[in-house]
Image (cartoon, rainbow, N blue to C red):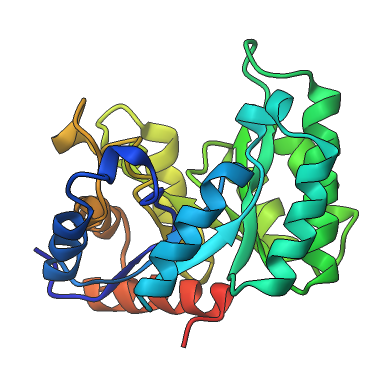
Length: 257
């Protein structure tokens, strides 16, 4: 258990895998001093569940977006729905959106179209963006540089240190998750230790990407303390400062009071 207050900056608490014990999952998060949880949207189908969850709990914060993983299932009407959704409903960000260049993924042009449009919607509505990036960091940076004033986070970051610094220069935060807890994650360990604390967030990406001590299990927000503990071992600052600053970063980005 953490005695420090933490924020889970990326967690899919609306997913059906939590349907049977969501209240218990939230209770365990509170017991571990997880004060707030950001819930990103992945398709129009899950927006109503996110909206309902967040309406019931002031410590859950909704994002609405169209995930690149399902780009071939999204359509133009979904982009119109997104424009309406963010105007008519409380939300803290556009996302999860982005690019995923794994071989089995949808055509890059289709992904890029949905990504660019969501970035523009975010700019028009003065909202930050939650970005998913797999093997696509250079193209992500290019799109962000074309839109000065846009802000947001790259979740579960996996690019290089140099790319991370370029993202930070464009006004983006770098979010670290369970991957940093694995012994062989040397590149991520270097990143976690060297990047400015003022640009870092922590996340679980639950139910996916569990930390090393919960490998092969369903991930959940309470396990954020494991990621926090590893981050503290990799950095020079005191634990209290790391907890305070990562929480302040999340509160500022997502406009959480």
